[in-house]
Length: 517
Image 1 (cartoon, one colour):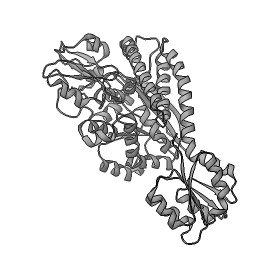
Image 2: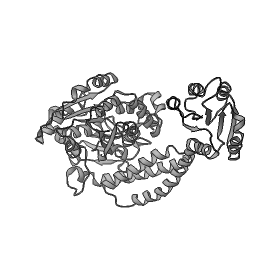
Image 3: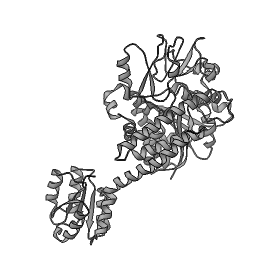
Image 4: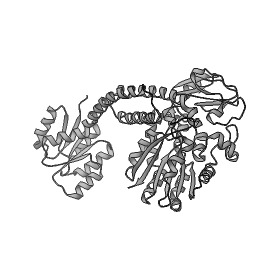
């Protein structure tokens, strides 16, 4: 490990010489200055890992120096050392984002603990996480070799996401590569598991089947709705479990987590099929047959999800429920701001549904726009971009309003997405759909080993526009590319986030319930 560089700023620095020697013996490089002006010059010219800063100095005070440091290097940790425990001084220092503070006279162990806490802790935590995952790696590997059921697959996915979030802070890139290999192995086995069981699940022939899109409202949402407390259901399109875990720390300031569940999206894992099924409480072929006025086929013009409110109304009517509900779909920042300003008008409803499309737009923009491709270059960056958007969005302000009013909140989605890696060749006619993770059509040409093929759409309750229509789905991180100009499109779409096929990221859907603090 490279040495930690520390700057100690104190007008009585000579009296602290024993502490400086102590730190040097512990392997730290320590520069010293006795005034704020020289300190700022040193900080501008050198890379320091930590600053010890005396609060009470002649000339520039410690608080004044702290303010200037934060302008120059806002992320540089500063530990304030003070003789005074006066509340106003400490409040000002803490408000200026000090990393820690010590009260004079300080002793060597206090100093060492402060360094460990603010610098070495990152290395210690990284090493501990690496060792812990190495032990867990073997345990997860053993689990993957077993005959897992749908609940155990959810547990595996939760574990892998938890480790991914812990290890992304690690300084050991090798362990992250091992985790990615284990995720790929898990996705391979998960795809095989889904293929073996999906027809029985959706056909109702399995004795033990997961909650899927078309029964999620019935089984997971409606039981939480009552006449005493308004419930806000936020459906964030294309919102993966790891993205939920990234934004939860922001929400934890305002909400308690009541439950964190996952359900299984139906195939195709796209908005047209999965979200329509969610709101209708029906599989797609049944929607098309029972409510043809609310179903738009893929080859028809128009938005494929323009009747979600009507479908939801029909669902609760079938259950004989007296629920007063509202429905709003947010497709732009301005629409979000407008609804944010009118949240008060929703408080008299039993259930308020708010569909938010940002993450889906981000996924598509990441494919089409070079700047977004660079900002969301991998899963970690994709999560980070989602978090940055969320913290500055009308959506967060709406959720804070829900907490302030004492209402309950449910957050879910319709499907996730996966960063695709491996191109798979497919040939279709001009009427074949454009999605990269699934295809349907009359004349599909492909290698059977590369896809999950369903020749009879009725087997998985999908519409059949033509008597010879069949569906094929990508597994794991594959994506479909036509033979024409193959190399260009294979390169263009590689490492983009896509959905429609079979993977844990696309199919295992978060549904979390929160109560205000």
